[in-house]
Image 1 (tube, rainbow, N blue to C red):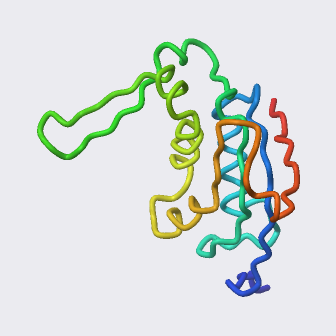
Image 2: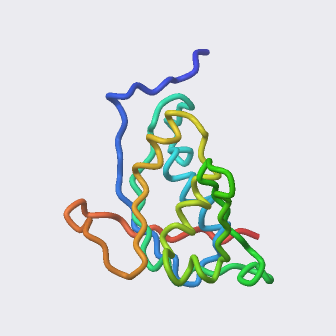
Image 3: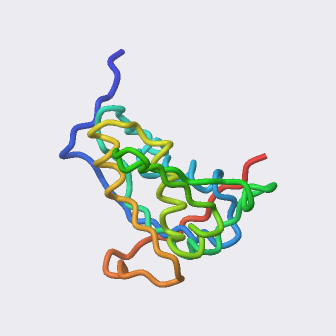
Length: 146
């Protein structure tokens, strides 16, 4: 029996809206990554971008468990000597809440050309509104695990 391999022309993309209000960051991010990669579809092919577009709203209301809100840090380096920066979770939440979800999902996506292509389908907004009404997105309710 031959395995089915999806072709790029056969990809059917949907748009989903995910409400992050009150959701746990890690559990929400895994489900967003699954939608972006297309792993929830029976036509999943590892080397094809067959995933859906995901619009995340209310990114500022995402929550973390334990003491991560006090201890979690985001790191980056400019490439120059002394260019190491670290930003605490609370300050990142106050200034750029969309980046919190974007960084969490990016860590779950392959670090290849395909991964960069997949990340372009993620749209994150801090508030409850988004400009993608014309695409008629479906409401996605994350599955509760455990």
